[in-house]
Length: 161
Figure 1: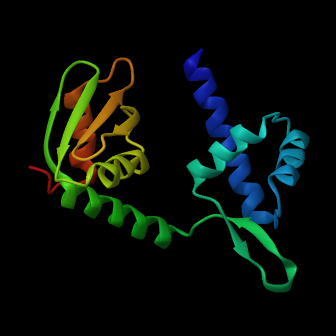
Figure 2: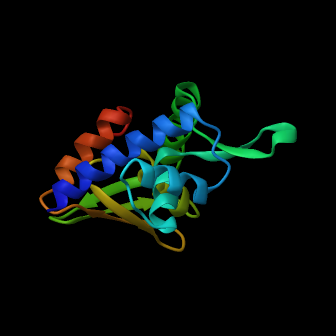
């Protein structure tokens, strides 16, 4: 059942992307109505999560007000580079077991490292919890392993030792 939902979400994200590239959408309510016309019925909370996944944001259109826009490929690559650098600046070591990974960080770097992992959208990761100061817990999806996490991370950041 989970795979079917993930496929449904991916299709919905594609539709949202197409709509935002073709139209100037001023509100989430307007986007929800358009999505309903396309057969997608969702709550405002779900739409907010979808917009976050797509990294959509409201941009100023001058006298016309604000509308939702997606970042360009250059902007996405620039952000990815920032996340990689945040990770490299902050992490000290990585250890894991069957279902979780613990990343030790320099003091004060737990939040930026957790945010970097979240934004890298690694397939094996459910999410992260940043400790107050120097630990990050990375929860892995069922069937994923610490080794898989490390492989995915090294594919994005080869500089990791």
